Amino acid sequence: MDPSDYTYPSPMAGYENAPPLPDERAEDGKSFKNMQTGVLSGAYDKFVEPLDNGRRGAFDIHIYYLQTNPQQTLYARELWQRIRHEFPELRIYTLWDKPIGPHPVAMFEVNLFTPAQFGAFVPWLAIWRGPLSVLVHPNTTEPETEIDPALRETRNHTQRAIWMGERWPIDTGLFKRLPLLAGEGVSTGAGVVGSVPVAEKKGEES
Picture 1 (cartoon, rainbow, N blue to C red):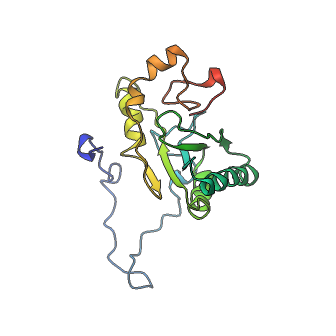
Picture 2: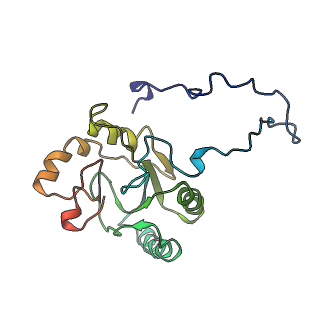
Picture 3: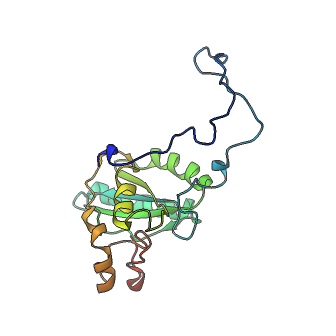
């Protein structure tokens, strides 16, 4: 998706009257010294808006594997088991053996609810994902009066997404069909996509 499709607030919003930053270098001679206030950013404790700090969770982690590749299939199953052992506090969904929802190959999903969980799990996964690809995408809560839910989901799965390893093409057209699919009780392979719990009825996740 073209980043120029969107508008962006200034990163300096709220800091317009901040004092000038020092030009002094740190001891390494490369990085800059910053003014210390003794107060940490609130982002250490709570995800910044409009990330979802509620029941859906702020980030979905989709871990992909080629279901036709025996080595990747075995690794994905062992990784799924390891995550359930080491991170039992996270929400961990079905290990699918086929493409599901907008995802082009088999995968499983993990949800993150706090900055601490993100800070622990994502670096861990950078090492332990092995040969598998990972999509990290945010869940946001912009109201439908500001943005169409389909466009919101498309942006979160593309322009705002983070990838580890090879990128896989996401079927973003599915998001435009969500109301129809939800009405028909068809699973998109998600627990919640946007604000629509399209698969809970069947006990399936997204």
